[in-house]
Amino acid sequence: MLITHDTQCALDVLVDLLNTAPEAAEQEGLPDLAALRDFVIRHEISEVGTLTTADLEAVRLVRTQFRAVFLADSTPEAAELVNTLVAKAGSTPRLTNHDGHDWHMHFFAPCAALADHLAVEAGMALAFIVVAGERERLRHCEAPDCARVFVDLSRNRSRRYCDSRTCGNRMHVAAYRARQRTAAESPDALATALRG
Ligand SMILES: [Zn+2]
Ligand SMILES: [Zn+2]
Image (cartoon, rainbow, N blue to C red):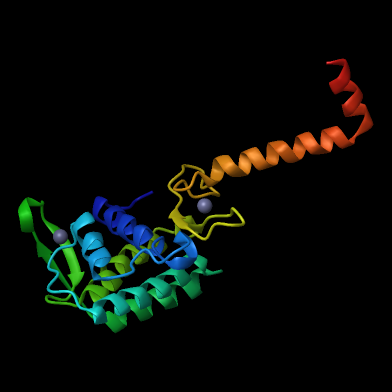
């Protein structure tokens, strides 16, 4: 898949952001400004000024809007959502080599509010995914009690579960137990099991 390191990093930030949502994390993962500041530091998000409760609310709103991109049924739907997010935030593409990083693009406007910064950078990363024909890699976990999202980077796009709460393992165990139950309810299988 032809995506750059910067796109990959922006997607990592986005997935982490989306998985702080109450529906994905069981409780609000960004409950206050301290949590938001931690998020900014953890992801080394640059050019972030003093954060306010307005920033917190705006980031939560953007989070909800991005979640819809991962849940979109079609590429046109996803494209429209991404276009709306980026247009509303306003972007100023420019080259930068801040903090010892090699030359790379920033798409957010200088001095942009954090929510706009995230909307533009994550929006552009998603745009590159769509352009690469890889929109279907934007997934939500198929475990029934899990609402986390992830980007499926597997070669054959076969990933169905998030890894953060080992949903894949849980689902495989559940399927194994279900098979055992079916076998136990079938007399032939029971006889085989008893002989074994
Ligand atoms: Zn940068
Ligand atoms: Zn999951």
